[in-house]
Length: 265
Image 1 (cartoon, rainbow, N blue to C red):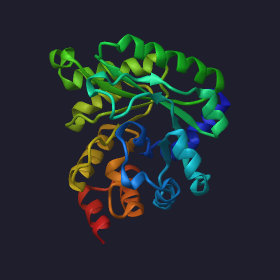
Image 2 (cartoon, one colour):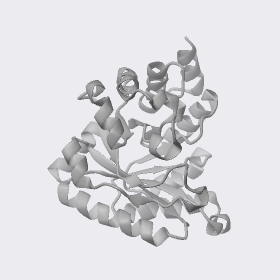
Image 3 (cartoon, rainbow, N blue to C red):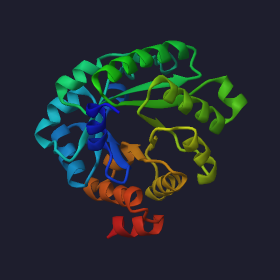
Image 4 (cartoon, rainbow, N blue to C red):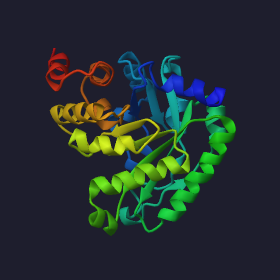
């Protein structure tokens, strides 16, 4: 493994090989979200709570700079290229920055999304593969966020479609894969077994904390390397405590009951 890549991965994952990655890359695509209005204030709360890494955009990096910590990794999102002012059916992932910009910004990795099953699947894969080429040249870890869409998902079934997509991301050069959790744990473990790189699970829409904790507990039990969540962390009224609770579930394998007890103290 390249020295640079190895060192950067160490800034994302703790010694146990797991990570609580907090995604705060939503505002470009999802619009104005009040918790993201003050980047430095939010980042300070996440750092205080012990987030292992942040997944974010150039604007969030620039305006949140005073709050960053040496102990918290930075993953720079370089795909997107659409907003809520676009027809949702036309959401097309584009590469809108470059791995070299991530290095200039001081990031420890880059992130792109591939929508497998989309009519432009091949184009998305080609884009991601070219990013992987640059990341390999620079020793920069690549996170590929996997989504599955389209009629073929119904044919294969959700879990099988996710397995195909996850392995596809690995084959394109992902150093870590961000993906939807599909329980139960013993079934999701089959997906983990197919991936020789760390797998982190996304959180999706805001959900009751009990459901979030069940999801995280199930994913970790299946062998996931942690989470890459956004709204279900910074959407909570006590961001530092919610972050610490997720860290307890991921790093200390807390039960849902212990997590709820800690959060409600």
